[in-house]
Length: 313
View 1 (tube, rainbow, N blue to C red):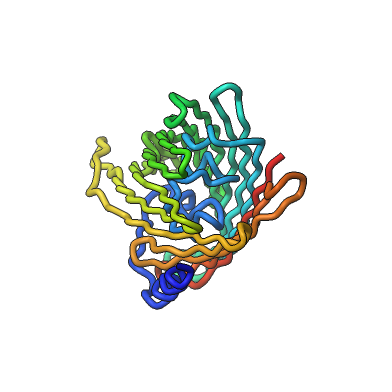
View 2: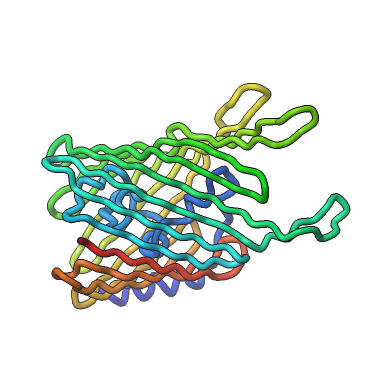
C-alpha cells in the first residue's frame, strides 16, 4: 500500500499548480497555520490536528489530552514570512479552550509614486489573535467557537477588525470523523485613510467559508477529504451583498512508518502538496512532533519552506 502513496505523490508533482483561489480579504490566515496542514492540502477540518486544534476547527479542542503548544515558521517567496503560536488546554469535565497568534508580513515592498519612480521601501504586517472555546454535547459530538481580533499595518496606515468562526465535530473511537466549520460567520476590518477633507473609512469584508470534511483511517493510512465553499462579500453602494460562491476541493493522504515517521501528500484543487513529519518523546511517549512542508506556490511565485513543532506539557 505504500506504493500507492508514492504514486499519488509523483502524480501531484507532475500535475502542476492550479489556479489561485486567493484575492479575498484576510488571505494570510488561509495559507495554513502549520506544516502538517499545508502538506495535507488544508483538508483537516475533520482531524484532531495536535498543536493547531483551534485554528483547524475550534470544535476539535475537546480532544486535547494535555496542554498542547504549537509553533510554526514559514519562509515564503517574495520576501514573505508567517509565524504562529498556539496553546490549547482542557477544562474539565467536558470543555477546552485555546489562544492562538498568527503573524504574516513582508518588510521589502518597493514603493513607487504616480509616475512609477521608486520611493521608500515599505513594510506590511498582518496579525491575528484568536480566542477559542469548545464543549462536548455528547461523547461523539462537540461544538466550538473562535473569536478573532485582527490588526494590520502598512507603512503609517493601520486597520483593526473582528471575526467569528463556528465549528461542529463528530468523532468515533475508530478514528472516523465528520466535521463542519463556518469560517468568518461574521467578520471585517476597516482602514482609516487620510483624505481631503477629513478621513475616509474603507472596510474590507472577510468572505464566508463553509467547510465540510471527513477523516477515514485505513490500516496505516489516513485519508482526508474536504470541500470549501467560499462566498465573498461585495460592497454595492452602501449595501454589502454576497458574490458568487467558489468551491475548493481538497484531498490528502498520510502514511506512517514504524509508528513514528509520516509521509504526506495531497491536492488543493489541482495544486499538489507534500511534506513529512517525525514524532518523538521528550517527557512522555510521542509527546512531540516536528513537521516540514514544501510549498510549491499557486501562481509561479516560487517555493516556500514551512516548519512547525508541537509538544505537550
